[in-house]
Image (cartoon, rainbow, N blue to C red):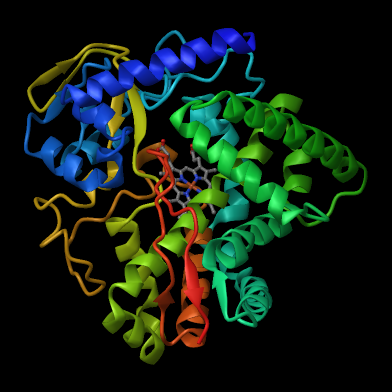
Length: 415
Ligand code: HEM
C-alpha cells in the first residue's frame, strides 16, 4: 500500500473512531482522549450494562470476570475466524497488508498453536525459571547501581525497560544486545497491538520486523552449526519451518519486553501512592509476590485481548454468531465487584478466591508468567531496599495505547 493511501486510511479510521467515541460507544471510548486516560471508568460502565455489549464498531465486548474467564477457556472460541482471518484491532487502522510478519503461536489456533507452544514450553516452566533468578538479581544490581548513582533517574529507561531485555536476550542466547534499539522495537511492536496509528508508526513497524527477522536468521544459522544451552539452540534443532522458527523466536523475545517493563513501572507508580505497602515490603520482603499479583489485578500491563467463536454460541443469554469478533477486557475483570471485594482498593492482603486474568486464561495463558513474576519480584525487592522513599518527580503521563497500559516515563528521586 502506498504512503498516500495509508495516510488516507489512517485519517478515515481516526475520524470514525472519534465519532463513535463521542456518540457514546463504550468500546471506542477506550481508544480516544479524554476517556482513554481512565479506562476503569469505562469498564465500570460496561459491567453495569448488558452482559455482552455490542459496539457500533462491530465487535461484541465482555467485561465481567465470569464472562471474560468463560470466553478465554471455552474451546469453541479461537483467535482467528473459521476462514483463518485474524480479528482487526478496533483501536486503530489494521496493519497494512504488506506487513511482512508471519503469525506467531499467540495468533494461531490448534493444532498449530499446540504444536508450536509445546516446543517453547520447556524453557519457561517454573522450575527452569527459578534457576535464572541469580542472574536476574545480578542484572538488577548492575542496572540499579548505575541508575541510583544519579540524583534522579527514569525508572523505565534506566531500569524497567533494560532489565527484561537483558534477561530474555540472555535466556535466548542473543549476543551483543543493543538495549536502546530493542526497547524501541518493543515499544513499536507492543503499540502495534492497537493497530497502526501513524505513517511513522507503520514505517517503524516495518523496520523493526525486518531487522529482527535478519538478526534471528543469522543467529539460527550460527546455533545450528554450534548449538549452545539457550532457547534458540533448542528450537533450531526442532522440526519447524524457517518462518515458524523465526516467528516463535520473535514472540518469545518481544512478548516479555513491554509487558514486564510496564508491570514493574505500574507497580512503582501504584506503590508510590501506597507508602504503607512500600514500607512493609522492606520489612517483610516475603509479601512481594502478593504485591506483584495485586498490581497485575489492579493495573495490568495487558488490558484486553480478542477471541472469535468458531460456531454460534449462547453467552449469558446473548447469541453470538460464528466469526463475531469478541473483545475480552481482562483489566475490567480485575475490577469486577462480583469477583473481588472492594476492587478499587489496592490491597495485597486480599483473600478473594478468584484469580486476576492479567496473564489471560485457557490455552493461550501467558507462557512467560513464571518469568515475569520472578523478574518483578526481584526488581521490586531491590527497589524497596534501595529507595526507602519512593518519590516521583514531575507528572508521569500514560502512553497513548489501549491494549498495553504503561507510562511513558517515571522519574524517581534517589535520595
Ligand atoms: C507482566 C508481564 C506479562 C504479561 C502481563 C503478559 C500477558 C500475556 C497475555 C495476556 C497473554 C495472552 C494473550 C491472549 O490470551 O490473547 C500472553 C501470552 C504470551 N506471553 Fe505473556 N505476558 C507477560 C510476560 C511475558 C514474558 C516475560 C514472556 C516471555 C517469553 C511472555 C510470553 C508469552 C507468550 C509466548 C504468549 C503466547 C502464549 C500462547 O499463545 O499460547 N509473556 N501474555
